[in-house]
Length: 154
Image (cartoon, rainbow, N blue to C red; front, side, top):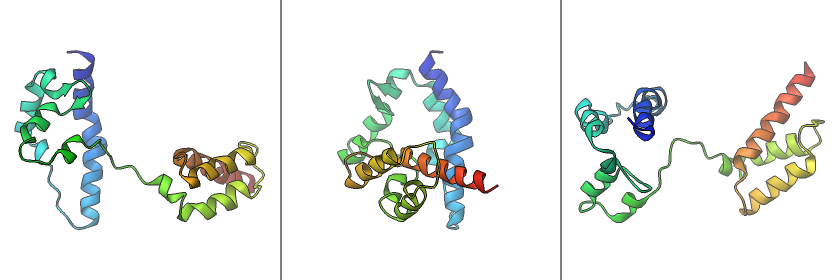
């Protein structure tokens, strides 16, 4: 077994049941849906595991054989689309609902010495103009300031 195959097996044993499938199940339950994952049928998984690596991955193209199998039936857009997971839209939040909270907490001189106010302000300005997506950095700064404020209050 090579490194890529080892990572695929690790995903099957850990990442899928502990992360992806749990999120799918919870999202479905939140809306009273019984969600099915047809590609997780044990026969499909066993078949996929037996395939040679060249049918699973070709260059940077993942799920190669699956894409090839559906290439006649699906338009090219979904076949070429990049993966997008269950991440939350942090970047969008700093354009809207978290914008004021960030300004109040991270820029209003809350007394934190962890991040320079000028740097925090530069990041939010760049983010809000759309030049750079600093969403994750802004999230960390916001929570660092919130933690610092909570810690100082005792």
